[in-house]
Image 1 (tube, helix red, strand yellow):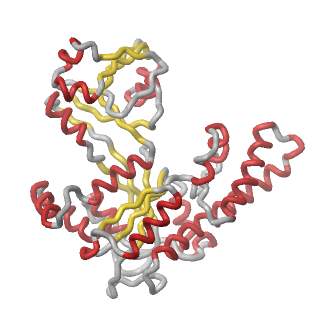
Image 2 (spheres, helix red, strand yellow):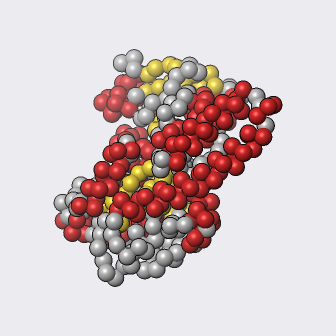
Image 3 (cartoon, helix red, strand yellow):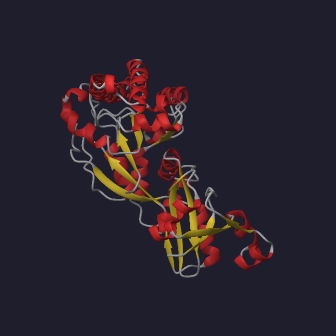
Length: 367
């Protein structure tokens, strides 16, 4: 299953417009009224990767398979969503299926686009969305705590540890803090215990400050969003969803680049957003390459060679013998695999080797 980043926020902040720009479609309805999105829209997005482009110049492969991420456009949340307001229960269930949150915050004035609370206040908007997610998580926590408490006398060691974690997490959430900021400080074993709860806020967050075309460099509102992100150790991007939508609708790459140059930009906000989302999900890329096919493989950072091989085919993992590794910087420098090999720069690695971002890999295996 592909890793998913969910686009969340209040109604009318630009979620569906951003989704359409990302996917270069009009699949998500974008209108000036709350809840024009009901069912989540899902789109698969190619991850911009300069490494892939440079490797293609060297291998001149006939087929290229890039890395992708799924983005999910989730309907706007409102105050009371955790209790079912604004179809809240339905929308919150969609959030439970994502691996990272892209939180869009409105940082523009426009009298033609209504704000659900009739004022532009980024801090308040963020608080409303996060509070509703936290309240739903507290409800999940209470149910699990009650069930475990009844089993206390016969609880095994790991269940007693879960109770301790639930107590700490309850205090954490009650202080209006997302579960993610609690679990990321835990040891891996405890983290896995908490993650079985599938809490809405137990995923990393990227804040996106949505501005108008006159404030692509930021404004007072975006600075407030940046401050909130900095406090939590999260990333923040400022972009104009409307401009990105216009760029996405241009016909050719040349037209898009010319548009960006006119705005004084070297890269689109969407490219930056996709790259940041990839980083947010703690993903890295390795490559398999030859004249027939250049393939970019997405894995979680920290995966060992046999498990990475299993992403290609399960037989590769079960029959893993070794991995022959070529570093990206070496093939870029010497241009040919034969020269890299002559230089003694192709490394033979075993089952404990941890794949690194940019590795070009040849797996040896038997069935």
